[in-house]
Image (tube, rainbow, N blue to C red; front, side, top):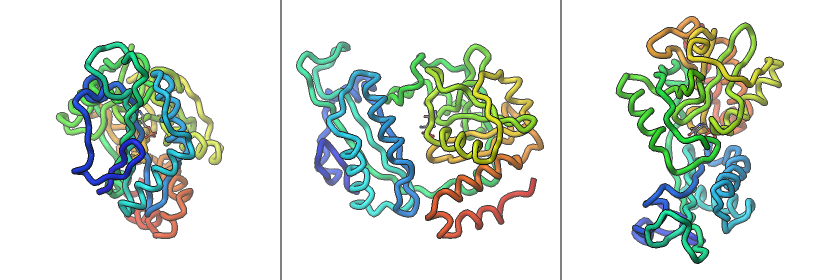
Length: 295
Ligand code: PMP
């Protein structure tokens, strides 16, 4: 495996990370996960633009342009011959003796990256997933893709301990997003999702789904809804870079819709696959469709 660190491509044993890295001490940094399908980067521009935005929101000035970040991402994919999986990029405020305030001298940020080979979650995409509602105890800047993931980690663990695949964050009675995903509900032919504000991360997959919905002439309403309303949706799903469009069949053990992936959700999944040429070429889209459960 080849890693990236501050302009260099290194073997693991050459990676020299400091105990005084503010990412390690405070989670003082941001990150991105960029999907690769069959060697092809997917929505890399959007992810890297969000990385620059996240960094700016916490007052880290990235030492690379968007073009340079794309180059780094491509180099990592090529050097590791990554087929299907993702590229992880992280930026921390840098290395300085531990003190909460920003370091005095302008320390350069530490930028690292590596690749992970992992297949598409085809079984879960076909069968759907279970969600567990969890009180959202995170801070109020969930729009920043921060390294601080303690609230997300605890929520996911709670969901997994209950035999669920994903947690559903609820704050003030309102369904916000998953522990590592955005959520959508469909009722009477309308697609509902939380507005892109500081309560959620504006997912890149979320944006893709909104585009697909418009192509499908599916009306979209970006507004808050309650846990009770979520449970009474005809269809429900969560989205993320790795989970793509995952149908939700139960929330807190309660059946959503017919308890199988919904028709419109499946239509969106099909459209999602159809806009990734390498998936169509590899016949993966059709293959999964044929094996998917009937609704
Ligand atoms: N919300 C949170 C809290 C997440 O961690 C993620 C995963 N990055 C998402 C939403 C989905 O974002 P994306 O579609 O860009 O992966």
